[in-house]
Image 1 (tube, rainbow, N blue to C red):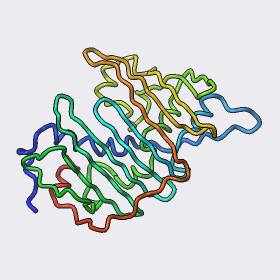
Image 2 (image 1 turned 120 degrees about the vertical axis):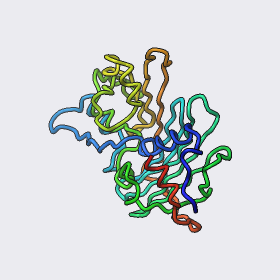
Image 3 (image 1 turned 45 degrees about the vertical axis):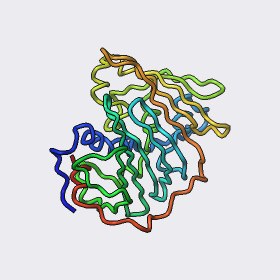
Length: 260
C-alpha cells in the first residue's frame, strides 16, 4: 500500500493521530503503592494512593472523558494485556477518529477508523499488526504496563486531601507529574499558579477501590473550565479480548501517522 501523503491529510486528522498515543496511554504513570505504614492508620492521601489502580493489581475496566475525547479500556497490568479504544475530536472540526490498541503479551494491534472518508488516508478499517520497534514516538508496550488514566500519578501529587464517606477530595499539582499528562501542557502553562492546586474528587467502592475520579480544570484565558472524568470497575473480573484472527500487517502509512 502506498504511503500516506501527509500534505493530503487534513491538519485536524494529523493532530488527532499525533495525540492518540498519549491518549491511549493517558500517561506513563508508574504504580505508586499505597502501603500502610506499620503501627498507624493511613492518612487520607495514603488511602487514596492505595485505592488507585496500578501495575501491581489485577484486571480492571475503565472509561475516560474530557471535552475533546472519550475512551474505554480494559487492562491487566500484571499480565501485560489490555485493550484501549479512544474517540478523539479536534476542536472546531466534526471529524472523529476512533482508534483501538490491543496488546497481548509482546504482540500489538491497532485499528484506526475516521468518522468520514478522508482523502489521502488509505488505512484499512481492520485490525493491523504493529511492530513496536517501528513506533519511535513512544514505547507502546511500556505504556500498556502503566496506569492508563493517571490516577496513580495524581494520588502521589496531591495536597490537602480529606476523606468523606464516599471517598476523597483535594488538589493535584499538575506541574509535578513528570511525563504524565492529565491536562494538555499548553493548558497547564496557561493556568499559571493555579496549575499547582487543581481540585479533584475521588469516589471509592465498598472495598475502598477507586470507582470515579473527577479533575476540575479551571478556566484559563478564553479557555473554559472543564471536567476530566474517569471511572473504574470490574476489578479482578475484566476480560481482555482475544487476538484478532483477520489482522494484517500495518502499512507504512500507519507508522507515518503514529510517529508524526
